[in-house]
Every structure is written in C-alpha cells, then in structure tokens.
Image (cartoon, rainbow, N blue to C red; front, top):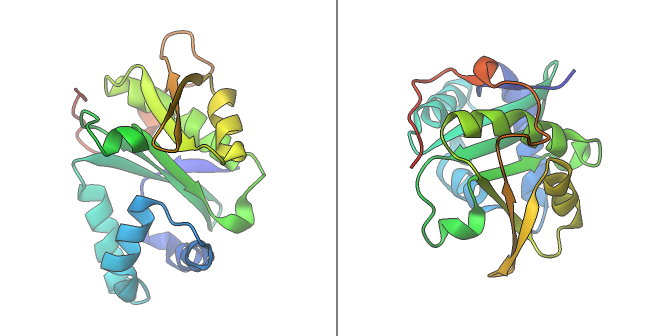
Length: 184
C-alpha cells in the first residue's frame, strides 16, 4: 500500500529510474529542474545520493515527502513554509509529481490528501495549490481533495483548500520527522 515517508536513501535504485522517466519528459517542474542541475551527476553514487537525501531533509524552506509502495518510488510532494510572494505564489504552498509510469493510478490524489493535514498542522490554512491551465489531471486531483478554484494567473489555475471540514481525512502526526516551524 503506498505511503508518504521521509526521503530515504533505501530508494536509490527506484528513485534513479523515476528521475530518468521525468527527465525524458518535455516539462520539468521548477524544483525537479533545479535538483537535476545541482545533484543529478552525483545521484548514481550511493554516497552522493545519501548526501542529496540529507540535503532534502535539511531544507528549512519546505518539507519533502516521498510516496512509495514497497521498494518503489512513486513520486514526491513538497510543502513550502514561507509566505508566498512572486514567483512562488504561482507555484502555491504544495507542489507534487508522480513518476510517469505510475500516473493515472490515484497516487497524486493519495499524496495530496495525505499531506494536507500536515500543511494545516504547520499553520497553512487555507492551502494554495496550483496547476497549469492545461493540466486536467492535476485539476481533478486538487478538486478531489476539496480545492476551490479562485481563478487563473500566469498560466496557472489557483485553488484553495481549507482545513476544517475538508475532505482530507487522517492526521499528520505520522508524517513529522523534523522540528517543525509554523508557517506565516
């Protein structure tokens, strides 16, 4: 059964396979593009990959979770803590990606539904989640967890997901592994 976990070097081989799938696509999100540029050349070495995982875990600007099933890395999701100023207001509080071979199986909805309570625990409420205007799949994911469309800006659809009474279900205590800060 898929689950959200802290990034972990045990998923080295599956992570590399997923990154090859992402890199083969024409579109890379901002975070993935940056990480490919900064870290991809060291990912193949187990020690280099372990350093990358440590870097992700130490990032104070966001919490990153990996979505895994057994030994398979399926995707990842990040909660940005800081106040959203341009250009981050186009990206929203949460960004996620599911490896191409695992798409259309409900994993994005599972990740977003699972991480929302943690965002609320951080004091981010409501949560801004955005997607490209042409990304029908992400739009459906965001709407499935209670996202309410605000409108479009900069080629992005902007959805707000409120905490109390939302469709997220479950608590987030099992997701905490770092000392947490409250988001502004």
